[in-house]
Length: 147
Image (tube, rainbow, N blue to C red; front, side, top):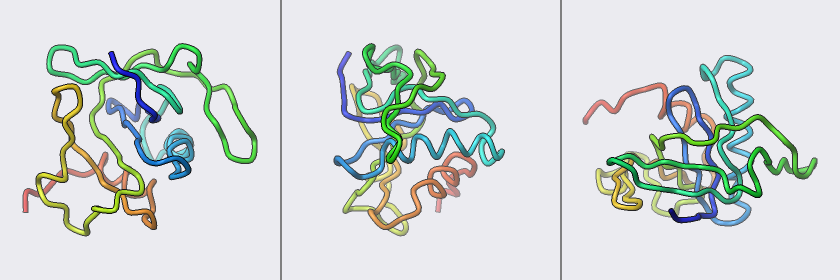
């Protein structure tokens, strides 16, 4: 099991791993996804972990767990550290890389996946100026057309 500087949210049946440099908005995106469930933009959302999460490959799947000391805690800018209900484990369905300089309008196949602990996972590279929440919701609610 490895520990990474990232946040994770279970959205419906899909866990989203949110990576990016310090200050890129990982915690803000995690909280925005949780809020999106309150307005039915997504069916369900619950925090898995914020700031540091544990990743583990198991039977071809990538699992994420909160760091024990941070379980149920999230940083909300302007409020500080807050407590939320959380999931103890979830299967990663998509990796979101915030502030990705290689983000493209129409991403090529090789940039649309990430290999983590030997598991290939769909990847969304998000430019610094992009609307993070809308892109993640669109990725979760639509399918790749294959074009």
